[in-house]
Image (cartoon, rainbow, N blue to C red):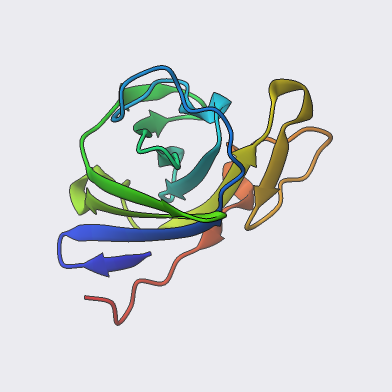
Length: 149
């Protein structure tokens, strides 16, 4: 992730697990988290945060939240492109900085794949507890944007 003036540029390079794509057309897709996905969460100093989801088939989702799991805006616009090659997929996104919560920022990233009965979850900063919970704001780590332009 890099800040480029008034944009946040996110680049993803992930293994492709071959999960079935959503039935929806490529683009904003509600409940994308039920499919193969990489998710990035960016939180501000309070309980406001942005959830950005990227799928290997071109589906995506951006949510603004104010309070844990309290969606205040969904399917927000941004630029997203994806390519699959062999056993990997790569995505690139540009998001307007104004969609992010107030600074200073904290973040976490997660990957989900597999059939519902055999879901696999991975996190950059693992969540504590018996079940995965990507909305644990206290487990997000600080982002230093200094020097990025």
